[in-house]
Length: 297
Image (cartoon, rainbow, N blue to C red; front, top):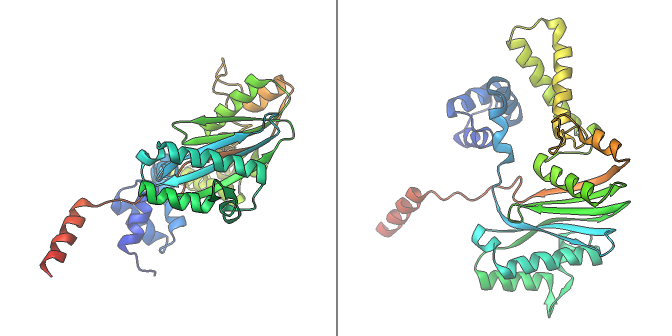
């Protein structure tokens, strides 16, 4: 059996917010497999075990650039170390300038963007100079460039922590704005079920079956129960399946809204600053102890 280390327990706890001993038991049951251990905790503890997955753990901003005719747009995320720097005017200017370069120059990746001209130098030399001026590390994390099939709409929320680019066909500007805000609020993973990773669907099905089995449901009913749970999951994580946040009856889905407006969504991109990144955690007591130990040498 794989050795269950303290670091493994710590990582699972950070992922799930589950109690330490529950994490250790789950890892033992899963023979050290973090993914399986997380599933085990979700079966036992429900949604509590997934709440840490959406926690924003790094600082920075998103920036968006749209062409005047709304047919070309870019969304970029640039990170820094503290929220204080995320509000710095020079940092914000770098983000908006990079977004404009992505839209107009169409770089292949971050390295290509970094090599593009900016001011008296390049994007990279501008970034490096700003690092020296501010005193924090800054990095260009990711970007996307979108060519519209219809017309682009955008939305930035929460101090530039969430950014949305949406390609909408038909409808009007208000509909497009509502859809962009819906994406920022609901954070769908895909437009419809075809865009959801099969392993996520399989995981939801397994979890639903185990929950139903532990609840004492008959074996013959497990697949049907699981299918209902999977469908509920898909409605939550797909834009078309979500309930429209402004629906007067609280029931109208985005798919129904679009049909009523004779409109459709060709695609969208959602960036949440720091999503998937780990923020450095400072242990003050440990730092003091380390400094004291060093002073005695």
